[in-house]
Length: 234
Image (tube, rainbow, N blue to C red; front, side, top):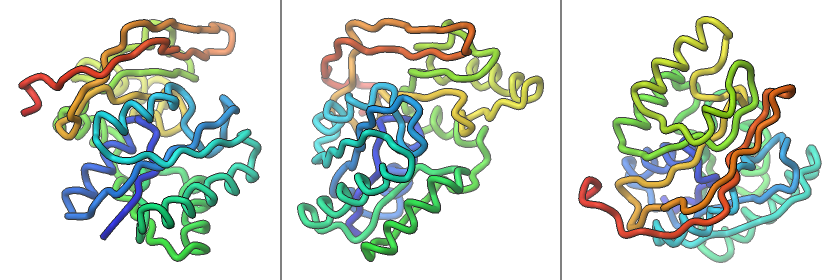
């Protein structure tokens, strides 16, 4: 089936895309919504502007929508972007990286029903530690770009998701009830390379913004370039 993917550049949308490809679906386009609201209810915000680099690195066209990020009204902007993808790329459905958020999944499903699109959620209700393990096993090079929960601090910004990361978040889950895959909004991610990238994203300049009193931080990526993929992904 010809599908578009709701794409943030983060781990969940990438893993969902890989699973769709494993099911022999065609990814006809990436669909990204850039929100002006850092606390958007629906959309990923940190480093979302890098979706255009991913589109080039993956050689998949990008449909880019924008929204003020006003609760519920941002769904109108999503519907416009999906409609554009239907016209431009004749998609029959979409892929999402939804794991447990009924708020997001339910609203996306409603829009798909209105447009006559199939909605494929390959990660839905997946164990969150298994999500992290699959990120590593599938060789998705993933870093943390946003944090929003105690006791995560600025040292977590820019961290790679690897075995050590998994051990640390498992301890935090037991002690602080943090969702290990960040499904509660505890952290956001960016994939900088994968087996399906033709180029990887090389971060040349970045700045950490962190507010200890609010347990909030973001990795602001100021400069990036596309690099030819190394042989480890061949």
